[in-house]
Image (tube, rainbow, N blue to C red; front, side):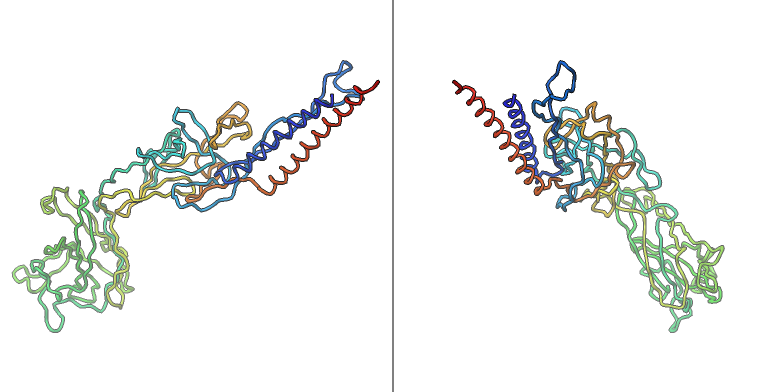
Length: 444
């Protein structure tokens, strides 16, 4: 019987060496999980029962090859679409035959059709954007293949009550331009170009129409005649045109415009230099499509001056902003910790494209290994729990990195020596049994 015992030992040790060799061979394979052979002893059936005081085992066998799904080290990659899972979970992949597989290998690229794929042409799945609420993308539905749309994003015209917002300071020491020395002409909107002496301060920014065409918006601030009123007129012009009043200015004396203009709804400040309660802070600006003369729709937006102050300091502009933009081409992709894939566009805008889906299993060791760092669901693994990165027990994503193999080469080389010694010892047991049988055969 020792022949059978020794042979089973040889087979077990050989299988363990195979496992160790496979680990060593995949020490540099991204997302690989190290395996280990688990042995069990074997007993022959006994007529007297399952156990007896004189029963001897008949060798060993490899009971299972278990993989250790522990976290591998993260290494920086030059590919922005490479992803590593920091924690539990697997990437959910759709194979060319339509079946679903799972992997920890996050090396991805984009194919000619815009699908995010692995080196084996398996497509990454995730959640698509179902709606956008207050600028926040909502991801819903069942996971499907993620596809990058390279179409230009449409332009957005400058629009809404806060279409243009300005943070600035108007100099409280300024006086009405008509009272300057030497005397200057009254602020006459029909003058083109406007004399510098006809306003106190000016600033410009770019706004966009419905076709994405840029237009230069110039704002003018004019101190009213009575400094104690702490009020200002606001004028605006587009593309160098003669400005129009946003504060409803009209000639003080219609018969003599040289006497100046008075605003119907001026921008008023209190004694502390802040916007006075009751003062308008947003002023409407409108140009019709005919005025633009380029096929665009009417351009209408509000100029928000609620962050303007009037302190005893020189005029300064701290911030100019507007919410329009021209059309943009896709220039790059980024992936967040929670799996949101975001496109970067040439117009400075960003747009959410989709969210990566992760899956986890009750028993990862029950998964069926398919090769190419892929696993498939089985009855032993349980059904996958699919969700977004960072939710539940699922890990988060690290973009621009890869998860290295969790193989410990030092440990594997030591195991290789151990299994080699086991193999040699089992061979010796067969040799010893052979010598005993040879002795019996040689008896006279």
